[in-house]
Image 1 (cartoon, rainbow, N blue to C red):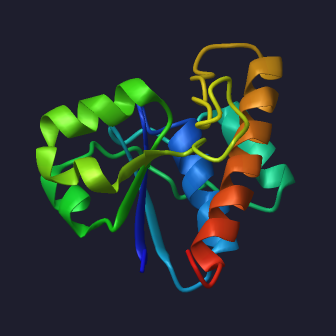
Image 2 (image 1 turned 60 degrees about the vertical axis):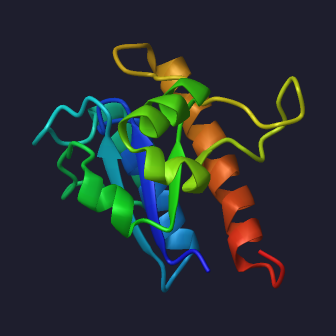
Length: 152
């Protein structure tokens, strides 16, 4: 049973805080946290990401970016990253976590049928943030279905 979820991106200010908030809302009773591989430690969520999240009823005002560490990785039952490159980075830094690290977009329709990476919108225009927010929302919905199904 996956109770402790860790959502990871690069800076922990755009994708992972929104992804974590979406999963936290969708999965009551689960513990959901976020962190970054190269976190902008102490920074709040990106203003555009936070505004789009707020429109969906999420509040990121208390979020502060955190750097991923071994204790967070050990505690997590499932680690969700935004790209295959991040999955490989986790495997390199924390080899014991390889089997519990998957892409947040794992269940999205992808080119090879094995999901899709969710691109980093940092310092991009609003259109990119909107597209990424939609991907995160759909991916969170698909994870909710997997994690709450009797066979999940």
